[in-house]
Image (cartoon, rainbow, N blue to C red):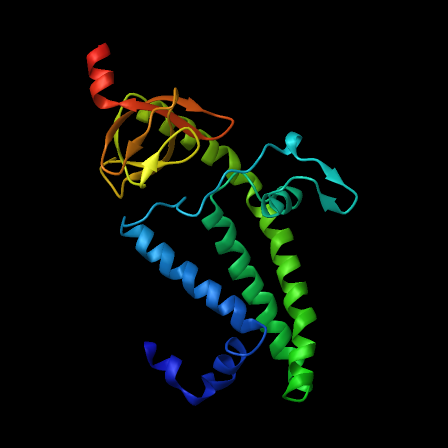
Length: 229
């Protein structure tokens, strides 16, 4: 079955996927495939690369630039790349970008001589493929947003009152993460303290409240929680 990948007829295929600009998408596509294989086995979470995005209403756009300091978050919001895990977005962009880049290279760049000229011709192909992939991804993830939003709400209800273990060097009012065993790979949650309290790696904390605007959880020590019951 796999012998087809080693046939001489496959040489043009390998040349295309390993040449610029397709090789960039090939790299990210390989990483995403490896990621999903590991995720299926339960070793990592689907939202391992997620970071907080500001609400669309809170993003101020002036002219062609962003006044928001988080340029990446601003770009994602502008192109409609929010509401689903970043890993899903990267997977779609990698696959779609790879497809467009591959066929453009296969049918058009073959007429361009090897060397610097081929590289220069590949730059607009890269930008075009990336742009089209982003646009299509924004359309594809729209129907997925309600599903992930509902799943997140269910997760929040489930974890409140549960005990988690601090995984970062510290947890304070500005920084920190904790892991919560869920019977699978475990959940990695962003946690914060109040009143100047601080925890260190390995401490047991209880998730008291979900701070929706920052997608974090307010925590107290397990001892304090049990003492107040």
